Image (cartoon, rainbow, N blue to C red; front, side):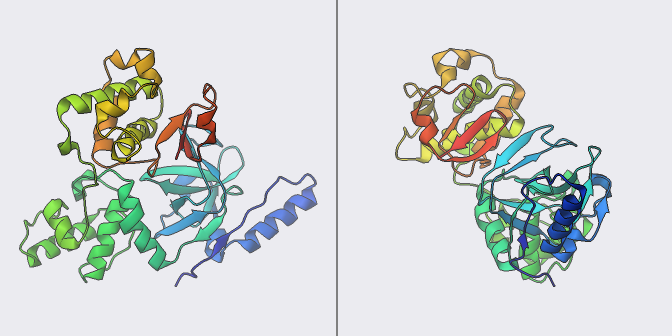
Amino acid sequence: MRNDHRTVRTSAAAPRPLLALVLAVCLLVSALPTAWASSVGSGPSSLTRSTAPTYVKLSRSVLIFQGDTYGSGVSLTLPAGTVCQLYSENYYTASDGLQYYSLYYLNTRYNVLRTDIQGDIMTAAETETYITGTLWKQTAYSTLRERDGLVGDIRVHAVQLALSRLGYYSGALDGDYGEKTNEAMKQFQRKNGLKVDGAVGESTAAALGITLTGSVSAASYNESETYLLGRLVHGEARGEPYVGKVAVAAVVLNRVKSPSFPNTISGVIYQSGAFDAVSDGQINLTPDEDSLRAARDALNGWDPTGGCLYYYNPATATNGWIWSRTVQLSIGKHNFAI
């Protein structure tokens, strides 16, 4: 049984003398939950996935990244209050000699410096509420099935929770759509007169009490609007990581839903002074496939920003007003704000 409301504490600075370093490490280990300090691996591959999800609500901002060493690869800065899932409650030592945890944020695995992460571990009840509520609104929605090889997927985790509550599933709540989840799904479908294929589409999701579609759906927009959104993404976020492209598209859609902005995609995009890509003509470039796919993912409900209405590049932004907005997270070169 896990202890709820455990707190992760870290060392703020690297001590200089060796004795101070040893003391700091000892204090750090003693402040961590027992399971968190139980073993040290030599890399991400040495970690064993936690059989039950461990979600942490951050109490301060933290840099997460996909590379093998600090800050390398695609990186995001998560603000205090963000919730992320630990891949394992054990840390590992990387090739640079530093220690890291692996975690999931919005369905993507990242690494974080062990001494950087600080926050409270959520209770089982808080975790379930978060997954079936907030997290679903920030994630791309589609049919879920075993052959897709979904591993550590929070959508699958929500399905496993639903099947578990209904008595069809007794395996690990690990977000892995494996054989046990597939068989449990087929039993549920058979019992409820649904098509028995193990896939979670609209009908099966509705029977489970889970919504697979967000408040905005790609079906609500025509091809020309989708293409226009893809052109904006290409003009604004070319060279950004894929999640950053989806985030730019999501900001447009969040504005469409906001009473403070025009209520159409074209209205938002062509609002005077809203986007540099319109002002400098880059919106007229032919979008690449990634930009179009990012537009479709955003239209299907994926919002990596969690509802942000603004973004800007802090290295180039000259509008003083934009700096007054509250930054929620950073993806690539962009800050996303409300």
